[in-house]
Image 1 (cartoon, one colour):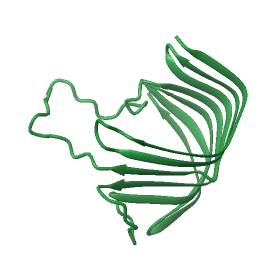
Image 2 (cartoon, one colour):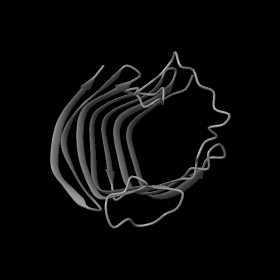
Image 3 (cartoon, rainbow, N blue to C red):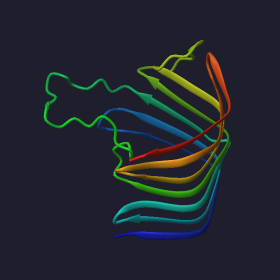
Image 4 (cartoon, rainbow, N blue to C red):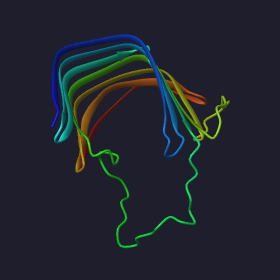
Length: 168
């Protein structure tokens, strides 16, 4: 069991890239600034707890080349999982406040290309501003209050969207 506790975390100007040997997905991150206050990470259970997380000027690019092998995939018709609140991670997240300013995220399938309009194979969200509070994610719960969401996608812009989410 590992349990790490942090009063303050401050990271700036870090770049990393990871490519999965299992499915070929590549994730590249250019971290601008990350600040965390009163945070804890544990492995039994797998859990991240934090009072406040702040992310600014960070870019995440994902390239998926995985097609799967439908010929050898086993099918179990008695067990169908439509959606798991923890998105299948097995992680618990308990975060009081999450704020993001000026971040970018892109997800591309097979190749990187800039789509002139909305395209699910080439999602590119720019200038993401986000403020979430009371986030709780585990295998049976997804909850939080979205105080602010703004961002630009090809074809449309979201500005000052708000919502409360509760899913059990």
